[in-house]
Amino acid sequence: TSGSSRLRHLFLARSTSLAQRPPWSDMAPTPIAAFLLLLASCFAPAAGNAAAAPVSPEEVEALAADDECEVTSAEGHCALSAAQLRAKVREHKAAAKEPEEEVEAEGPAESSEGSDDEGELSEEGEDAEAESLLAAPVFNAECFAFTGGTCATSSCDAWRNAQCSLAKCVCSGCAGADGKCYEQKNKLVAKRFYLTNGKYDKYKMYFQRMSAFDQMKTTKMWSTYNLDQDLFDLYELPGEKDGKKAYFLSSSKWPASVMGFKATTGTALSPFGTYAVDLADKVSVIDTWGPSSVMLHLCSLGPKSSYPGAIQVGAVMAGKTVWAYLHHGSWLVYGSVTSPGEGGYWIPEPALPADLELPLCE
Image (cartoon, rainbow, N blue to C red):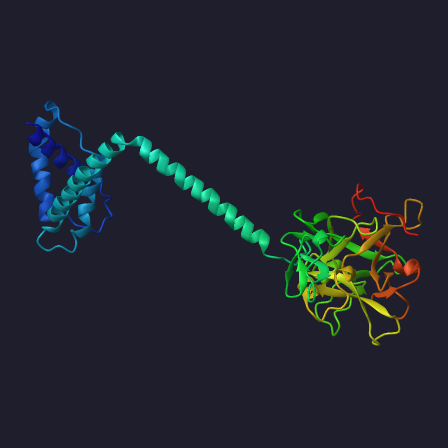
């Protein structure tokens, strides 16, 4: 019969599992295993002539897995109990699967509609998350939300398209050079370049790791030993101020830090100096200069200059443009309200992109 034939196949599968056991296996055959081998040998001649349903891989795996308890079982009943339990589990799974297939056959359209609804909800959730991220103001070189406007006593000017937060007019997007809000981020136009001084051509500008005033400094130490503190990234802000573009000159090593200008307040003979500025601090109530001190202006010396590719770096302070320069007797970078000369020429290495159109220095 079909049942006895299936039983013979099970016994044969069991015997095959035992025969394929590696010779170094530490599991000795149990009395049950020996009994199954004997039965398999008795049924083997009949198995060749009987056509029966093949044994499933799961059943072979279950019989092989029965060996797990052969070493610890003293009476040999563990394997039979495990096989019986596995058979019951397969029966329950088959019984549970049939109604599910019937339900799927009866209502495929309803299931598809539910799937579409889930997709729509997922897209709506993603849109809401994107809006919440856009609404949260950020303050870094890639996107700086502070427009420079204040709203302590009045609302923000409508032309800024900004919102009032802690008495500051901030954007849900990014502020441009003109103090307006834009949805686009600042454009990275150059990255990981050095700024070597024109007058002292062995000295490069760098961000100090630790300093009393965080002032920008120069060094002639090899770049390998500077640990990327002398590498800069350049971001172009959207919009223009008085017909000029504005830029963030940020640290490649510390992206939150940018070069900015401040008054030296009696700490040096020069009235202004250049400093490492954390953009998040520009929204502080104690910051008196606003974004204009870090939104820098760049100009080119032009192709006819004795310093090919050299630029000047400045910012508008108290209505005047202050230029970064290096003067004799100090390796700190200060700010000059007059023409800085060769000490204010900075040569990017590698050169800035050719398509970056900078105005000529006056």
